[in-house]
Length: 623
Image (cartoon, rainbow, N blue to C red; front, top):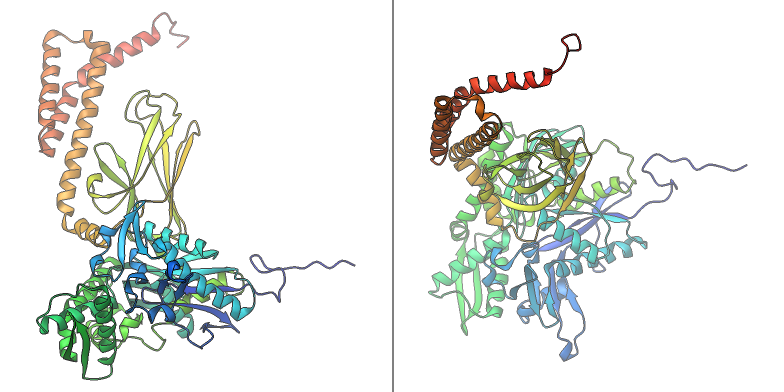
């Protein structure tokens, strides 16, 4: 008798078989890989028992007998001796052009623009940020496969909540280079929420304060029975612990009467010493900063007060983002039941104190801030691989900026508002502007402003083959589909004929970190101005449409008007044309109304003529 193997949907056919799935925290300063083993998420160590892998890659000189590269701790050890070929903080370059990377000249290695993106000069040739990240990811992949003695089924990789399409796509490209099947990209704060929500059984509104080595995220989430809903997100993907190090190093040089170090090796050494002093000040009242600058040794005593003073602006930037995220979520700080601290930089007492004072409660630090993101990603990976029977886990991430298309007059019609939960698919119907129009050009944009000129262009494509119809008769449905990774595709379909066009939006790498924050700030600061600009453009478009329709009617049935009536209509049209060239939306609307009323009698005569022509030669009984 043959036996049938029965399994639950999405589960492995073999109930004893387990797919190897991991969560990877690809960080600016260090990276980790975690997996669920024996029902518990844990970070996987290397052969020396270290779970942290420094996000550093050193390329060796083939001309000197070197081959390949060093990754992690081996590369980190060479950061001072070979700074030009030792690549750190590469996460800041993902999906970027050189000009859009803050303090790029302070890096110890050389960054150039090639093929529309930042690339790095090394003795082994030009390397893209994706290639460098792929080396780190591949190392973590091999660690996982060695741990389980099996091939890796897939990974959930975390990204900052503020990563845009280009940065997310760059992360997926890096994973592909590393031979990793990406089960999903999830936001780092969401991963932290998974770890805390499942471990602690917490429910309610929580703030996830994530300050890593190079990025800062703040997310406001509501946790309810396994549903993780991101209510709002914000932050700065060019702010992290590295900036605290640089601020401290700059302060020390200023105290010594020195300018910034020009030598790459000295810059790397200063950065390394600043990090050591910063970490020492977390447990002591003072520390001594020692380094070599311009060929002479320097020594500077640094107190906790000194450190807090020279980094106050950075801490203030994070708290400004926290206040804005709360406003976006529509909740007060007193409604937040807990604040989860994520990222190694949250170990700084000044940061914990600032967060605690703002919310009026001590932040949650009972999980290792370095590991919590990887642990949450591992729990999600375990579920997506079909290893977990917990079907209640649901993630509702959000998009950081609104998405829409350009309409007549250079206006933006938003289809997906910012902070919309993803994955999602939203649609809106549009129509043609001119008679007989057989094609429609679509321009996809991102941003919070009402004019296309003030938003970011994502993609352009054309829908062709629309049947010739009168203006306004065609019905074109434009659908925006955003997948769980936050990547966008746009479809346009004419409802009558069924003709369709589609584009997967893969923008050129390059929306700057400052631009993201600036787009949001401008959206609020210029709201009134944008409303006025939109009203003016809409009034002009309506006026132009009315003028075109009136001219068309006069060309066909102008003989119905007397000479005086024609002169009156012409005068109203000329007045509207003149006023429409101005900037008074109310005056344009008034002139349009005057023309519409002035042609009501003409419209009635045209209708009568049309009816007469339709009835001509027909018997009343036939009608």
